[in-house]
Image (cartoon, rainbow, N blue to C red; front, side, top):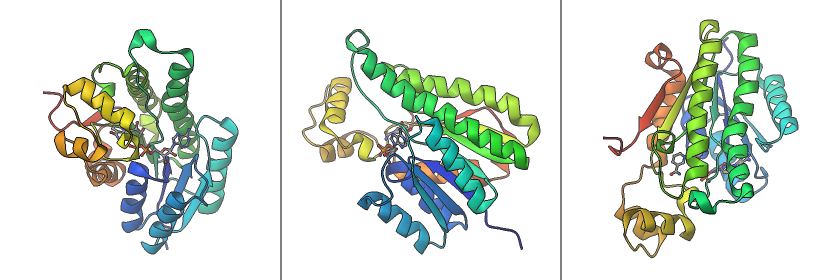
Amino acid sequence: METKKVVLITGGAMGQGRAHAYKYAENGFNVVLADMQDPEQDAFKETIAECQNKGAEVLAMKCNITSTEDMEHLFAEAWERFGRLDVVIANAGVINFGYTWELTDEQVEKVININLIGTWRTDKYAAQYMLKQGFGRIINISSTSGLYGTPKLATYCMSKWGILGLTKTLAKEVGSKGIIVNALCPTKVKTPMCETMEYVQFINDLTGKNFKTVEEMFNGVPFLEVEDISSMVYWMGTSREAGKFNGREVALDLGTLQ
Ligand SMILES: NC(=O)c1ccc[n+]([C@@H]2O[C@H](COP(=O)([O-])OP(=O)(O)OC[C@H]3O[C@@H](n4cnc5c(N)ncnc54)[C@H](O)[C@@H]3O)[C@@H](O)[C@H]2O)c1
């Protein structure tokens, strides 16, 4: 009997990562969830329990993608438990805001360290294990901010453009060895990342609107739902068609790239 397929998701405790875990669990995958949050925390606990309800065996680990030690440990444990790694979703990420001339070293280093170097680190170990087994798909979560510039978002844009360079390079390195590496570039998505007044202020500055709450903002400008991203990430990770391109960025842009 063939063993169940396995997906590993960074930033899997909540937001988009949680939705991806549900989608893969529903479709018969076992799930490895890595997040800087502790699996004992409420949000993470809920994600784990729901994946189990959907029939998945779950390995959940507190893991910071900026730590080589954590990431080595994560992949070694996942391999030890499941013995295969079909899909890796490099999803963990953060955002911060500031005009380019106002940014501090700390702000820039934080986002580059997590979003860009953390994604490279995820891809590094994903590639090592996938090369061993001779197959696999890696999906890097970039953003429409990896496709155009946005005022007050230099740190985020730099990191998300960088992810596309990584995606294209790794795809060329491993494409002939059965491994597919693509990036997904969503525009704004309703997740905890956007549920802060700082984010609302950023959108107000960008659009000239005057939203007073997160709810008003969600209703006033176009946002994707997490399920939109999950469906795409599932298709990219499993479909025959999505195995026919490599090193590409796929934009879920709600028409903003026109
Ligand atoms: N929400 C959006 O509008 C949007 C749009 C395009 C792309 N994205 C990208 O999608 C991905 C998921 O974002 P989200 O909207 O679900 O955000 P979120 O803040 O709701 O969730 C992010 C998750 O990543 C975890 N995380 C953060 N830093 C980590 C680290 N160093 N190590 C391990 N885990 C860490 C958090 O604990 C959290 O569980 C990110 O890469 C983000 O940049 C988000």
